[in-house]
Length: 152
Image 1 (tube, rainbow, N blue to C red):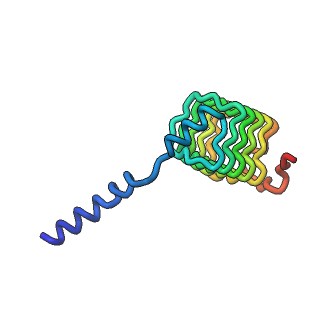
Image 2: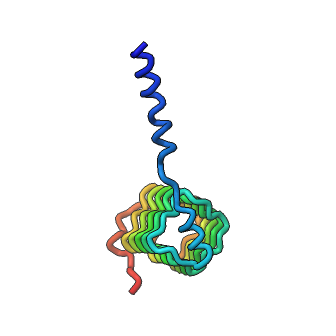
Image 3: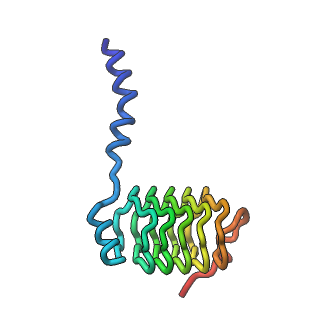
């Protein structure tokens, strides 16, 4: 009996832990949408699909796992932001500052990435299928990190 109980608890524990992972802060989301600024905010897992975030200041914000598909982030500042596993499918990313951002596992399928700064950004397992990338140091293969220019 005790063995069955322990086995059941061992199987159920990951389910409880998965539900306890903290999602983004709704107040941070409201602040971003009303002011266009949310420095250091927790927006992880939030649905920002199709949002107009032109010129948004999101420096140091946590957008891990956020849905930004179809969002317009033209001119946004995402310096030091965490975009790990974020969905940026079909997003507009012109003149975006991704300096030192975490883009590991981000989905940029069909994204429009023009003239953006990726100096010091981490981009492992980045999905760039059918993305339009111009004047931005994102590519396939090679150790180009030393050649990526920084914005002053």
